[in-house]
Image 1 (cartoon, one colour):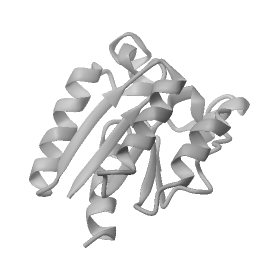
Image 2 (cartoon, rainbow, N blue to C red; image 1 turned 90 degrees about the vertical axis):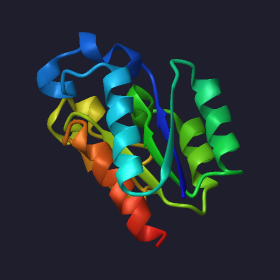
Image 3 (cartoon, one colour; image 1 turned 180 degrees about the vertical axis):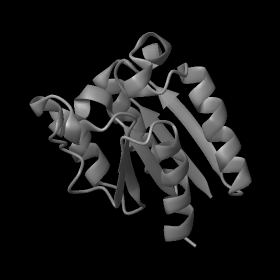
Image 4 (cartoon, rainbow, N blue to C red; image 1 turned 135 degrees about the vertical axis):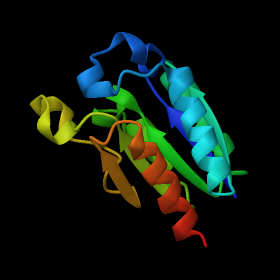
Length: 143
């Protein structure tokens, strides 16, 4: 089983963001955890991060060809990028939305996600463990 893990805008700066909200890890440390969790679940994860919306969309399109599931954390794009939503809507494989912070408890503009109605599951406010739960969900959903 192959799972695409697509991280969006500003997630490359995790170690510089509020650790109470974002978990205090660097992106590299987070990806190391994701790879370990995938290995434990006998699947393969491919982690990618970009600050460029068009590149993120291209990666969604590429993943259509090979991924058995997709974990997405679009970052702030989750709140307004209908183009990313349209790219994710193409998947027949499970799309799982993750946010490190609890966006439902944050600023009003962060409480809405353009992805939530097409996501098979959402894990928000669980810090890095949200990615582990997303992998578990996909493995269970495709078993």
